[in-house]
Length: 242
Image (cartoon, rainbow, N blue to C red; front, side, top):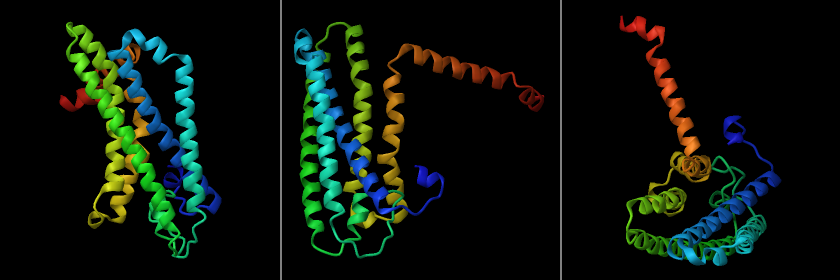
């Protein structure tokens, strides 16, 4: 984002490696944490009496450590593998950051197949997490629909919908980026799609989760109401309408 805003088109080799490492690290860790959060909601709604034992403080520490640890491992493997590949197709990346797919286009040997194999393994693991999330939410919605009171259903849905919105946004943008057909690929489209999956989800995550907070919703509503009333009472608008 800084490179784009400052119109900086050059980046050093070490900075590019740092970008790849941090990008893979945070993407992997976030998807792992989203998977853990689906398990948390499944236990809270489907097994509420066992929540204290299944998702206690020690279990949370272990799951969080596993998420960050696996993200770090994937980042080290991908970064080391990519930057051991000889690059001889120039030094221009058709992207606004050091994206793995764009770096592989600069390779000049069959060594890039190792990275492709590692990407396939990562996709299989990600698919396993995706199946886990889907199965968890199928069980969650079945349990919610069996709740007799409408208030209880609303409370359960309000706990799950922010997480489900973040998962949908994260996965849909990443799938569009990496699973779109090659014949519709273009430089401008690739950049737009990269912004969608790398910038948009992290930017809106805090907003989506924070709207479960009643004080924040009241503050936003008050701000919007105040802006609207100021616009109505604006002398310029009065003069214009007169």
